[in-house]
Length: 236
Image (cartoon, rainbow, N blue to C red; front, top):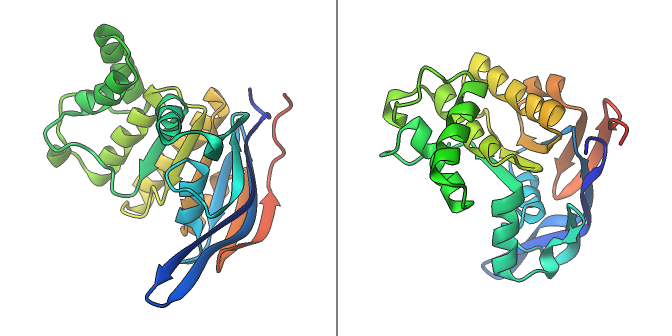
């Protein structure tokens, strides 16, 4: 799978009406991403990074443009089929962790597998395996209130990885973390690309993360200003 084109978007545009004016957030953006690579999208706040990731992942329909994800034309699908595509193929990691306060670490991961119709015993096994893979085998029964920020983000990563997704979208995954925890998180995402063959798209404004990217895209004012391939996609 590594080296194969995972995402191919053409002409993505998106605007919002604010009062009587319309603000264009994405301006005819072309974007692609490969399996086995970490693609980092960088730029200042308001540059269109988060809107881009929302359009690529089926969370927000662009006004114009196409997104071909895993060979399928995403925005030609019905809303229900887009939701199913995300459930089956995508893992999401956000800066706010999005954990359930009443569930422990194992249950957080089991919950998403339950939605994927994974049998209970298999879900429990995969949850433990995913948490161990992010170094949380000693925190399996802790709830979010008992975890540090870095540990919460690792639970979120375990939850995303447990689905064995082909596409991983991370929106500012280290912004709420100290530098040490942030490095752990980006290393885990890098590992997901290299060992699992996922296409990992990370939106960030943290320049320290560039060291872990295979490709760095800089955005500003709704456009891509530069696209630097640091390492070529692995051969298919």
